[in-house]
Amino acid sequence: SQQGEEDPQALSIQEGENATMNCSYKTSINNLQWYRQNSGRGLVHLILIRSNEREKHSGRLRVTLDTSKKSSSLLITASRAADTASYFCATRSGGYNKLIFGAGTRLAVHP
Amino acid sequence: KAGVTQTPRYLIKTRGQQVTLSCSPISGHRSVSWYQQTPGQGLQFLFEYFSETQRNKGNFPGRFSGRQFSNSRSEMNVSTLELGDSALYLCASSLVSTGGSYEQYFGPGTRLTVT
Image (cartoon, rainbow over all chains, first blue to last red):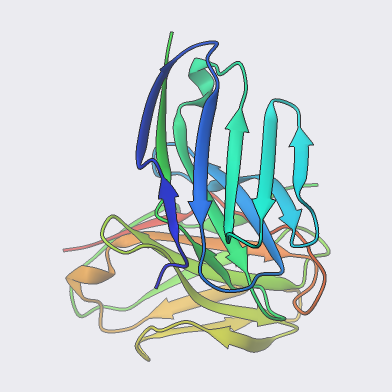
């Protein structure tokens, strides 16, 4: 079963624009991680935000976490065609390494 | 460090057969988790191994099993394959299993097709 949903399911933008993806989850979490997947390949870890953090940056990525609303957002600034991929949020609850994934957002960045 | 490696990358099997997939975690990582990805169900947790012990299991039938060796390498086995087992199987490794906030790093996956 999936923890929550990403919104939107698909996003199409032009190079240079910003892309924002949202993720909602259902239960309390230890941390939330964002992953990128290119065309059915493996998942690439982008960023991890802990439950006691509200915002985190990594290069062109900015992640926010609102535990009161059980939601997170991923912002990719100045997008490039190479950012075209599916993006997933995954939450970790409890003491083990079980990640629960959302359905993902398919991002298409057009040159 | 080398990343997570999975073998084989592609596999075609016939319904009723069994299959074994292999995962080598990042050096020093002791936790290995397995996930199944299908278009219909998305990414679903199969099980996690830590220090050769299964620590957590997802909601999959007993046909799905796994094990971990003393060098942290892990294998998963699917017996009596069904068409619905066709999927991308992903392995992830992490430094620790309990507590902490450690990233999980995924391998490239094994694409299993059951005909």
